Amino acid sequence: MKLLLLLTFLSTVNVFSATKLKPNFVLIMVDDLGIGDVGCYGNKTLRTPNIDRLAAGGAKLTQHIAASPLCTPSRAAFMTGRYPVRSGLAAESIFGAFIFSASSGGLPKNEVTFAEILKKEGYSTGIIGKWHLGLNKEQRDDFYHHPLNHGFDYFYGTTVTHLRDCIPGNGSVFQAGAAQFLKRTLVIAVITLFTLIFLNYNRFLKIPRKVFEYVFLCLIIFVGPVIFFFWKFQYLNCFLMRNYQVIQQPVVYENLTQRMTSEAVKFILRNQNKPFLLFMSYIQVHTALYASSEFRGKSKHGIYGDAVEEVDWSIGKIVNELHKNKQQNNTLIYFTSDNGAHLEEVSSSGEVHGGYNGIFKGGKATNWEGGIRVPGLLFWPGVIKPETVINEPTSNMDIFPTVVKLSGASLPQDRIIDGLDLMPLIQRKSVTSEHEFLFHYCNAYLNAIRWNQKNSSSIWKVFFFTPIFYPEESEGCFNSLVCPCFGHLTTKHDPPLLFDLSRDPGEKNPLTPQTEPNFYNILRTIEEATKIHRENIAVVENQMSLKNVIWKPWLQACCSSWLEFCSCDQDEKFVLA
Image 1 (cartoon, rainbow, N blue to C red):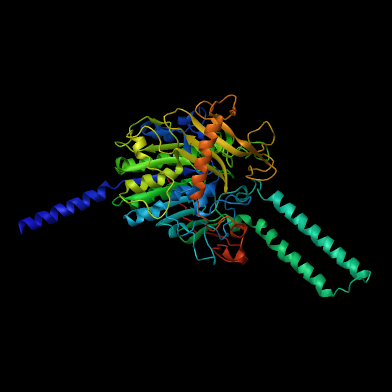
Image 2: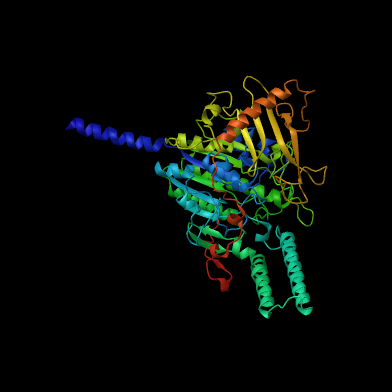
């Protein structure tokens, strides 16, 4: 009997210990933050003391690569550990990311996120902030792509990207395109009507009156929804959700980062006695920019700098809460950006609203280093040594296998996982990255490849095509807001452009057969790797096809009624002190 009691006691202790040993995870992603925007990566004028403390107390990745230079595909890769082309979240058209909340595309249900796996391991899982991987598919309340159907227990945030049109007075990303669409439609309609009138008047054809009525009806059907949508864009596209409920439509951006921080603190408090994963996905610093009154006008870099410094404050509050609850030593904190800074973001008054990518060329929407090389920090006292610096290539896809393995779970065996566990590299059990090749896609098009050559200090990178910058001396596409992936505004390269990033991280001097003796051998090796990679890409439904990204009124989330222009405000007014 005593032996039985002893065994029961030991079993209880083991179960308790196993539960306590499960680490927590706080995964922090800032939207459109440049690698040169934070102090630990060289910025001397923006104040980011809390982010810098993560770097000083943990590991800094100097060659941390986003799997895509755009929001939606980068986040899909981050969540699944797989190139976005595998999940169909890589566009073949100009729409590289979801723009409308009432689109039918999104992260497919057959894709497995780290949240799903950890939930099965007993974790409480929450996402606060930007999702950007779809909402509904067939009906406005089926929530097919909603984060709660991808492994999260709790959601407070926005389902789609934040745009200038969401805040009055910040300009519009649609105005020029919408005006062009309306102009073309009206020109076609006028030409059609005058042609019909001419044919009818000269008795070439006898045209019934109903034909003219049908033309007017088609014009109304085509033009009416476009005018209505962009007239009320702020109400229809910019809303805040808690779980499945729309609680604020349109979003009130004043103190939004403070409200998100409050939600994060409450999530941590609710899970003091249970392992948790918190994905803190900041809406800042994507345009339209905003900052709370405590931060507005306080930085040296206008509203963009104010927003960065407010994010840093928020991160400090979250870290302090972990410390206060004695959870810091059992929590892995990861910090990154979804892609490089958006260089083309300049306000109508000429104020720079985009970030800084340091010495690196290009920015968001390009696979130059400035578009994909992002901050990467990991902080875990007692596990990761302070001031660790990793110069090897790593990817935001690596977080998936890292988190899954640390939770005690196994990686899915029925699919290719492109990410690799970071812990051997960070704990110096391995000195080189296992990423020999990284494939850089511009939407669905293989744009560039990085080769981390073994037993060599060289890191080769080839480009098959590059965007044409405008103005020519700039490093962006200021004529189109984002650089394209195909068409007359790109330049194809045959042979591909070749760089050695170890000697030329700014990608200023492409190599030639004259300057690099192994030029053709390098290209041959990369070509072989490309062939193997392409053979491992299965054909899947394109979630970013035109039919999946356009606005569909029947999928529109609405917290009140169309007559009230979908307007409501049920969010809590509490702001973290």
